[in-house]
Image 1 (cartoon, one colour):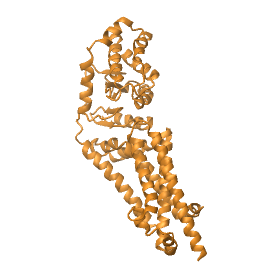
Image 2 (image 1 turned 90 degrees about the horizontal axis):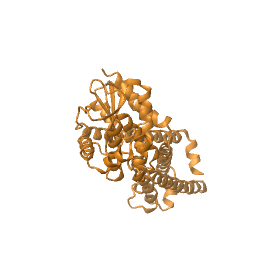
Image 3 (image 1 turned 180 degrees about the vertical axis):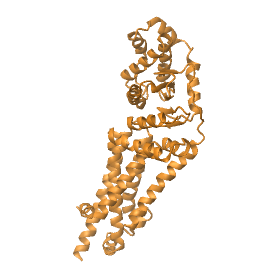
Image 4 (image 1 turned 90 degrees about the vertical axis):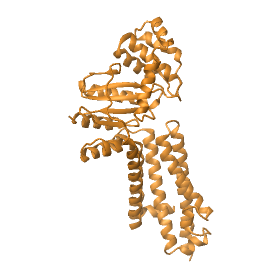
Length: 213
Length: 178
Protein backbone atom coordinates (compact mmCIF):
# COMPACT_ATOMS: atom_id res chain seq x y z
CA UNK A 1 0.00 0.00 0.00
CA UNK A 2 3.01 2.26 0.56
CA UNK A 3 3.80 2.02 -3.13
CA UNK A 4 0.22 2.82 -4.01
CA UNK A 5 0.39 5.91 -1.83
CA UNK A 6 3.67 6.92 -3.49
CA UNK A 7 2.08 6.46 -6.89
CA UNK A 8 -0.84 8.71 -5.94
CA UNK A 9 1.56 11.35 -4.58
CA UNK A 10 3.63 11.16 -7.79
CA UNK A 11 0.53 11.67 -9.94
CA UNK A 12 -0.58 14.58 -7.76
CA UNK A 13 2.88 16.12 -8.13
CA UNK A 14 2.74 15.80 -11.91
CA UNK A 15 -0.60 17.65 -11.94
CA UNK A 16 0.69 20.28 -9.54
CA UNK A 17 3.84 20.92 -11.57
CA UNK A 18 1.74 21.12 -14.74
CA UNK A 19 -0.56 23.74 -13.28
CA UNK A 20 2.36 25.63 -11.75
CA UNK A 21 4.16 25.65 -15.11
CA UNK A 22 1.11 27.01 -16.90
CA UNK A 23 0.68 29.50 -14.07
CA UNK A 24 4.23 30.69 -14.57
CA UNK A 25 3.55 31.56 -18.17
CA UNK A 26 0.17 33.07 -17.44
CA UNK A 27 1.66 35.70 -15.16
CA UNK A 28 2.56 37.57 -18.34
CA UNK A 29 -1.16 38.03 -19.07
CA UNK A 30 -1.79 41.74 -19.64
CA UNK A 31 -4.12 43.25 -17.11
CA UNK A 32 -6.85 45.78 -17.40
CA UNK A 33 -9.29 44.67 -20.08
CA UNK A 34 -11.75 47.50 -20.57
CA UNK A 35 -14.94 48.06 -22.46
CA UNK A 36 -14.33 49.97 -25.69
CA UNK A 37 -16.95 52.40 -27.06
CA UNK A 38 -17.61 50.22 -30.14
CA UNK A 39 -17.62 46.87 -28.30
CA UNK A 40 -20.78 44.84 -28.83
CA UNK A 41 -22.56 44.47 -25.51
CA UNK A 42 -25.55 42.35 -24.56
CA UNK A 43 -27.12 43.60 -21.37
CA UNK A 44 -26.34 46.60 -19.24
CA UNK A 45 -23.13 48.36 -20.38
CA UNK A 46 -22.64 49.52 -16.79
CA UNK A 47 -23.09 46.05 -15.30
CA UNK A 48 -20.64 45.40 -12.43
CA UNK A 49 -19.46 42.14 -14.01
CA UNK A 50 -18.61 41.80 -17.68
CA UNK A 51 -17.93 38.62 -19.61
CA UNK A 52 -15.63 39.28 -22.57
CA UNK A 53 -15.75 36.44 -25.06
CA UNK A 54 -13.27 36.00 -27.91
CA UNK A 55 -15.09 33.74 -30.33
CA UNK A 56 -16.03 32.91 -33.90
CA UNK A 57 -19.22 31.47 -35.29
CA UNK A 58 -17.73 28.35 -36.91
CA UNK A 59 -16.22 27.03 -33.67
CA UNK A 60 -18.41 24.21 -32.31
CA UNK A 61 -17.40 24.95 -28.71
CA UNK A 62 -18.44 28.60 -29.09
CA UNK A 63 -21.73 27.35 -30.49
CA UNK A 64 -22.30 25.14 -27.42
CA UNK A 65 -21.26 27.90 -25.04
CA UNK A 66 -23.66 30.53 -26.42
CA UNK A 67 -26.81 29.23 -24.60
CA UNK A 68 -24.79 28.96 -21.39
CA UNK A 69 -23.72 32.61 -21.68
CA UNK A 70 -27.28 33.74 -22.44
CA UNK A 71 -28.56 31.77 -19.43
CA UNK A 72 -26.02 33.40 -17.11
CA UNK A 73 -26.87 36.89 -18.44
CA UNK A 74 -30.63 36.29 -18.02
CA UNK A 75 -30.30 34.82 -14.54
CA UNK A 76 -28.26 37.73 -13.26
CA UNK A 77 -30.48 40.55 -14.49
CA UNK A 78 -28.55 43.76 -15.07
CA UNK A 79 -25.56 42.65 -13.00
CA UNK A 80 -23.73 40.82 -15.80
CA UNK A 81 -23.07 41.99 -19.37
CA UNK A 82 -21.76 39.97 -22.30
CA UNK A 83 -19.17 41.54 -24.59
CA UNK A 84 -18.46 39.77 -27.88
CA UNK A 85 -15.07 40.15 -29.55
CA UNK A 86 -14.20 38.65 -32.91
CA UNK A 87 -11.52 36.01 -33.11
CA UNK A 88 -12.04 34.26 -36.47
CA UNK A 89 -9.58 31.41 -36.87
CA UNK A 90 -7.63 30.91 -40.10
CA UNK A 91 -8.74 27.28 -39.77
CA UNK A 92 -12.26 28.49 -40.61
CA UNK A 93 -11.90 31.10 -43.40
CA UNK A 94 -15.69 31.58 -43.59
CA UNK A 95 -15.77 32.85 -40.04
CA UNK A 96 -14.14 36.14 -41.10
CA UNK A 97 -17.04 36.70 -43.52
CA UNK A 98 -19.42 35.88 -40.67
CA UNK A 99 -17.66 38.41 -38.45
CA UNK A 100 -18.17 41.01 -41.18
CA UNK A 101 -21.83 39.97 -41.46
CA UNK A 102 -22.23 40.40 -37.71
CA UNK A 103 -20.77 43.90 -37.92
CA UNK A 104 -23.14 44.71 -40.78
CA UNK A 105 -26.10 43.49 -38.71
CA UNK A 106 -24.92 45.67 -35.83
CA UNK A 107 -24.48 48.65 -38.13
CA UNK A 108 -27.99 48.34 -39.54
CA UNK A 109 -29.93 47.74 -36.32
CA UNK A 110 -27.62 48.11 -33.29
CA UNK A 111 -26.20 45.69 -30.72
CA UNK A 112 -29.54 44.02 -30.08
CA UNK A 113 -29.59 42.80 -33.67
CA UNK A 114 -25.90 42.00 -33.58
CA UNK A 115 -26.65 39.43 -30.87
CA UNK A 116 -29.88 38.23 -32.51
CA UNK A 117 -27.92 37.65 -35.70
CA UNK A 118 -25.16 35.90 -33.74
CA UNK A 119 -27.64 33.54 -32.06
CA UNK A 120 -29.32 32.81 -35.38
CA UNK A 121 -25.97 32.02 -37.04
CA UNK A 122 -25.06 29.65 -34.19
CA UNK A 123 -28.44 27.96 -34.71
CA UNK A 124 -28.04 27.37 -38.42
CA UNK A 125 -24.34 26.71 -38.91
CA UNK A 126 -23.16 23.10 -39.05
CA UNK A 127 -19.88 24.61 -37.68
CA UNK A 128 -16.27 23.81 -38.67
CA UNK A 129 -16.45 26.05 -41.76
CA UNK A 130 -19.39 24.15 -43.23
CA UNK A 131 -21.80 27.07 -43.47
CA UNK A 132 -22.95 28.25 -46.89
CA UNK A 133 -22.14 31.98 -46.74
CA UNK A 134 -24.81 32.67 -49.37
CA UNK A 135 -27.32 32.30 -46.56
CA UNK A 136 -25.96 35.30 -44.61
CA UNK A 137 -28.09 37.97 -46.40
CA UNK A 138 -31.15 35.71 -46.05
CA UNK A 139 -30.66 35.51 -42.30
CA UNK A 140 -30.25 39.28 -42.14
CA UNK A 141 -33.43 39.69 -44.15
CA UNK A 142 -35.28 37.38 -41.73
CA UNK A 143 -34.36 39.78 -38.95
CA UNK A 144 -35.64 42.76 -40.92
CA UNK A 145 -32.36 44.13 -42.27
CA UNK A 146 -32.79 45.36 -45.86
CA UNK A 147 -31.02 42.90 -48.17
CA UNK A 148 -29.39 45.44 -50.49
CA UNK A 149 -28.02 47.48 -47.61
CA UNK A 150 -26.64 44.35 -45.97
CA UNK A 151 -25.04 43.06 -49.18
CA UNK A 152 -23.38 46.41 -49.83
CA UNK A 153 -21.90 46.33 -46.32
CA UNK A 154 -20.82 42.69 -46.60
CA UNK A 155 -18.99 43.23 -49.87
CA UNK A 156 -17.17 46.28 -48.56
CA UNK A 157 -13.97 46.28 -46.52
CA UNK A 158 -15.13 48.78 -43.94
CA UNK A 159 -15.14 46.37 -40.97
CA UNK A 160 -11.90 44.59 -41.79
CA UNK A 161 -9.82 46.81 -39.51
CA UNK A 162 -12.40 46.63 -36.73
CA UNK A 163 -12.26 42.81 -36.79
CA UNK A 164 -8.46 42.76 -37.07
CA UNK A 165 -8.29 45.06 -34.05
CA UNK A 166 -10.24 42.51 -31.98
CA UNK A 167 -7.92 39.74 -33.17
CA UNK A 168 -4.77 41.73 -32.35
CA UNK A 169 -6.19 42.73 -28.99
CA UNK A 170 -6.93 39.05 -28.33
CA UNK A 171 -3.45 37.93 -29.34
CA UNK A 172 -2.07 40.57 -26.97
CA UNK A 173 -4.08 38.87 -24.22
CA UNK A 174 -2.66 35.42 -25.02
CA UNK A 175 -5.85 34.24 -26.71
CA UNK A 176 -4.75 31.15 -28.61
CA UNK A 177 -8.03 29.31 -29.02
CA UNK A 178 -11.75 29.98 -28.89
CA UNK A 179 -13.89 30.38 -26.93
CA UNK A 180 -11.73 32.44 -24.59
CA UNK A 181 -13.50 34.17 -21.73
CA UNK A 182 -12.31 36.97 -19.50
CA UNK A 183 -14.64 37.75 -16.62
CA UNK A 184 -14.06 41.21 -15.28
CA UNK A 185 -15.05 41.85 -11.65
CA UNK A 186 -16.11 45.33 -10.38
CA UNK A 187 -12.71 45.80 -8.68
CA UNK A 188 -10.82 45.01 -11.89
CA UNK A 189 -9.90 41.42 -11.02
CA UNK A 190 -10.01 39.07 -13.98
CA UNK A 191 -10.87 35.40 -14.30
CA UNK A 192 -9.70 33.79 -17.52
CA UNK A 193 -11.11 30.64 -19.11
CA UNK A 194 -8.86 29.45 -21.94
CA UNK A 195 -11.33 26.65 -22.66
CA UNK A 196 -15.11 26.52 -22.66
CA UNK A 197 -16.40 26.35 -19.06
CA UNK A 198 -19.44 24.44 -17.83
CA UNK A 199 -22.48 26.38 -16.63
CA UNK A 200 -21.65 25.51 -13.00
CA UNK A 201 -18.07 26.76 -13.29
CA UNK A 202 -19.07 29.97 -15.07
CA UNK A 203 -21.86 30.63 -12.59
CA UNK A 204 -19.47 30.09 -9.66
CA UNK A 205 -17.04 32.60 -11.17
CA UNK A 206 -19.84 35.15 -11.70
CA UNK A 207 -20.91 34.81 -8.05
CA UNK A 208 -17.30 35.21 -6.91
CA UNK A 209 -16.76 38.20 -9.23
CA UNK A 210 -19.95 39.90 -7.98
CA UNK A 211 -18.54 39.72 -4.44
CA UNK A 212 -15.27 41.36 -5.52
CA UNK A 213 -16.09 45.00 -4.83
CA UNK B 1 -10.67 -14.19 -15.01
CA UNK B 2 -7.45 -13.27 -13.19
CA UNK B 3 -8.34 -9.57 -13.04
CA UNK B 4 -11.52 -10.29 -11.07
CA UNK B 5 -9.44 -12.15 -8.48
CA UNK B 6 -7.23 -9.08 -8.15
CA UNK B 7 -9.99 -6.49 -7.92
CA UNK B 8 -11.82 -8.54 -5.27
CA UNK B 9 -8.86 -7.80 -3.01
CA UNK B 10 -9.77 -4.56 -1.26
CA UNK B 11 -6.36 -2.91 -1.59
CA UNK B 12 -6.21 -3.36 -5.39
CA UNK B 13 -9.83 -2.33 -5.82
CA UNK B 14 -9.16 0.83 -3.84
CA UNK B 15 -5.93 1.45 -5.76
CA UNK B 16 -7.77 1.13 -9.09
CA UNK B 17 -10.58 3.47 -8.01
CA UNK B 18 -8.17 5.92 -6.35
CA UNK B 19 -5.94 6.18 -9.41
CA UNK B 20 -9.00 6.44 -11.67
CA UNK B 21 -10.41 9.31 -9.59
CA UNK B 22 -7.07 11.12 -9.55
CA UNK B 23 -6.58 10.68 -13.28
CA UNK B 24 -10.14 11.86 -14.00
CA UNK B 25 -9.64 14.96 -11.86
CA UNK B 26 -6.23 15.60 -13.46
CA UNK B 27 -7.60 15.47 -17.00
CA UNK B 28 -10.58 17.70 -16.21
CA UNK B 29 -8.58 20.21 -14.18
CA UNK B 30 -5.69 20.02 -16.66
CA UNK B 31 -8.06 21.22 -19.38
CA UNK B 32 -8.77 24.33 -17.29
CA UNK B 33 -5.14 24.74 -16.16
CA UNK B 34 -5.06 28.32 -17.37
CA UNK B 35 -8.13 29.22 -15.35
CA UNK B 36 -6.84 27.42 -12.24
CA UNK B 37 -3.40 28.99 -12.54
CA UNK B 38 -5.11 32.38 -12.78
CA UNK B 39 -7.28 31.96 -9.68
CA UNK B 40 -4.46 30.56 -7.54
CA UNK B 41 -1.60 32.81 -8.69
CA UNK B 42 -3.04 36.02 -10.17
CA UNK B 43 -6.57 36.78 -9.05
CA UNK B 44 -5.79 37.56 -5.42
CA UNK B 45 -9.02 35.95 -4.23
CA UNK B 46 -9.06 34.06 -0.89
CA UNK B 47 -7.80 30.49 -1.01
CA UNK B 48 -11.24 29.20 0.04
CA UNK B 49 -12.80 30.87 -3.01
CA UNK B 50 -10.06 29.44 -5.25
CA UNK B 51 -10.82 25.93 -3.99
CA UNK B 52 -14.56 26.54 -4.40
CA UNK B 53 -13.97 27.54 -8.04
CA UNK B 54 -11.76 24.47 -8.57
CA UNK B 55 -14.53 22.29 -7.19
CA UNK B 56 -17.06 24.02 -9.47
CA UNK B 57 -14.97 23.01 -12.51
CA UNK B 58 -15.11 19.33 -11.46
CA UNK B 59 -18.74 19.49 -10.37
CA UNK B 60 -19.78 21.19 -13.61
CA UNK B 61 -18.19 18.52 -15.79
CA UNK B 62 -19.80 15.70 -13.81
CA UNK B 63 -23.24 17.33 -13.53
CA UNK B 64 -23.35 18.39 -17.19
CA UNK B 65 -22.52 14.96 -18.54
CA UNK B 66 -21.31 14.78 -22.14
CA UNK B 67 -19.63 12.34 -24.50
CA UNK B 68 -16.22 13.78 -23.57
CA UNK B 69 -16.97 13.25 -19.87
CA UNK B 70 -17.97 9.65 -20.57
CA UNK B 71 -14.77 9.05 -22.55
CA UNK B 72 -12.56 10.64 -19.89
CA UNK B 73 -14.30 8.62 -17.15
CA UNK B 74 -13.86 5.36 -19.08
CA UNK B 75 -10.21 6.07 -19.85
CA UNK B 76 -9.54 6.99 -16.21
CA UNK B 77 -11.18 3.80 -14.95
CA UNK B 78 -9.28 1.60 -17.40
CA UNK B 79 -6.05 3.41 -16.48
CA UNK B 80 -6.72 2.79 -12.76
CA UNK B 81 -7.40 -0.90 -13.45
CA UNK B 82 -4.20 -1.15 -15.49
CA UNK B 83 -2.13 0.44 -12.71
CA UNK B 84 -3.61 -1.88 -10.09
CA UNK B 85 -3.09 -4.96 -12.29
CA UNK B 86 0.51 -4.00 -13.12
CA UNK B 87 1.20 -3.35 -9.41
CA UNK B 88 -0.13 -6.81 -8.62
CA UNK B 89 1.94 -8.30 -11.44
CA UNK B 90 5.13 -6.66 -10.14
CA UNK B 91 4.39 -7.90 -6.60
CA UNK B 92 3.68 -11.38 -7.87
CA UNK B 93 7.00 -11.37 -9.63
CA UNK B 94 8.88 -10.10 -6.59
CA UNK B 95 7.19 -12.44 -4.11
CA UNK B 96 6.18 -16.01 -4.56
CA UNK B 97 5.78 -16.39 -8.28
CA UNK B 98 9.18 -15.31 -9.46
CA UNK B 99 9.75 -18.62 -11.15
CA UNK B 100 6.26 -18.63 -12.63
CA UNK B 101 6.70 -15.29 -14.33
CA UNK B 102 10.24 -16.13 -15.32
CA UNK B 103 9.00 -19.34 -16.85
CA UNK B 104 6.85 -17.34 -19.21
CA UNK B 105 10.01 -15.91 -20.65
CA UNK B 106 9.25 -12.31 -19.83
CA UNK B 107 12.77 -11.79 -18.57
CA UNK B 108 12.08 -9.10 -15.99
CA UNK B 109 8.88 -7.29 -15.25
CA UNK B 110 10.28 -3.89 -14.38
CA UNK B 111 12.40 -3.70 -17.48
CA UNK B 112 9.34 -4.84 -19.37
CA UNK B 113 7.16 -2.12 -17.94
CA UNK B 114 9.74 0.39 -19.04
CA UNK B 115 9.90 -1.36 -22.38
CA UNK B 116 13.61 -1.95 -22.04
CA UNK B 117 14.88 -5.31 -23.14
CA UNK B 118 11.54 -7.08 -23.01
CA UNK B 119 9.37 -6.99 -26.04
CA UNK B 120 6.48 -9.05 -24.73
CA UNK B 121 5.60 -6.98 -21.68
CA UNK B 122 7.06 -3.80 -23.10
CA UNK B 123 4.49 -3.83 -25.82
CA UNK B 124 1.55 -3.98 -23.45
CA UNK B 125 2.98 -1.42 -21.05
CA UNK B 126 3.72 0.92 -23.92
CA UNK B 127 0.28 0.38 -25.38
CA UNK B 128 -1.20 1.26 -22.02
CA UNK B 129 0.94 4.36 -21.48
CA UNK B 130 0.72 5.60 -25.04
CA UNK B 131 -3.03 5.12 -25.16
CA UNK B 132 -3.49 6.94 -21.89
CA UNK B 133 -1.29 9.90 -22.72
CA UNK B 134 -2.66 10.23 -26.22
CA UNK B 135 -6.18 10.02 -24.88
CA UNK B 136 -5.78 12.54 -22.12
CA UNK B 137 -4.01 15.05 -24.29
CA UNK B 138 -5.96 14.58 -27.47
CA UNK B 139 -9.37 14.45 -25.83
CA UNK B 140 -8.85 17.77 -24.16
CA UNK B 141 -6.47 19.66 -26.40
CA UNK B 142 -7.38 18.53 -29.91
CA UNK B 143 -10.63 20.29 -30.62
CA UNK B 144 -11.99 18.18 -33.44
CA UNK B 145 -12.71 14.49 -33.82
CA UNK B 146 -11.34 13.93 -30.31
CA UNK B 147 -13.97 11.26 -29.67
CA UNK B 148 -12.27 9.04 -32.24
CA UNK B 149 -8.95 9.33 -30.40
CA UNK B 150 -10.77 8.62 -27.15
CA UNK B 151 -12.33 5.46 -28.53
CA UNK B 152 -8.98 4.27 -29.92
CA UNK B 153 -7.41 4.87 -26.53
CA UNK B 154 -10.17 2.93 -24.79
CA UNK B 155 -9.57 0.00 -27.14
CA UNK B 156 -5.80 0.11 -26.47
CA UNK B 157 -6.29 0.29 -22.71
CA UNK B 158 -8.77 -2.60 -22.85
CA UNK B 159 -6.27 -4.59 -24.93
CA UNK B 160 -3.58 -3.84 -22.37
CA UNK B 161 -5.88 -5.14 -19.60
CA UNK B 162 -6.67 -8.26 -21.61
CA UNK B 163 -2.96 -8.98 -22.12
CA UNK B 164 -2.29 -8.43 -18.42
CA UNK B 165 -5.15 -10.75 -17.55
CA UNK B 166 -3.70 -13.45 -19.80
CA UNK B 167 -0.23 -13.14 -18.28
CA UNK B 168 -1.66 -13.30 -14.77
CA UNK B 169 -3.77 -16.35 -15.63
CA UNK B 170 -0.65 -18.16 -16.84
CA UNK B 171 1.19 -17.14 -13.70
CA UNK B 172 -1.68 -18.39 -11.47
CA UNK B 173 -1.90 -21.69 -13.30
CA UNK B 174 1.85 -22.17 -13.10
CA UNK B 175 1.80 -21.45 -9.34
CA UNK B 176 -1.04 -23.95 -8.82
CA UNK B 177 0.73 -26.65 -10.81
CA UNK B 178 3.83 -26.34 -8.60
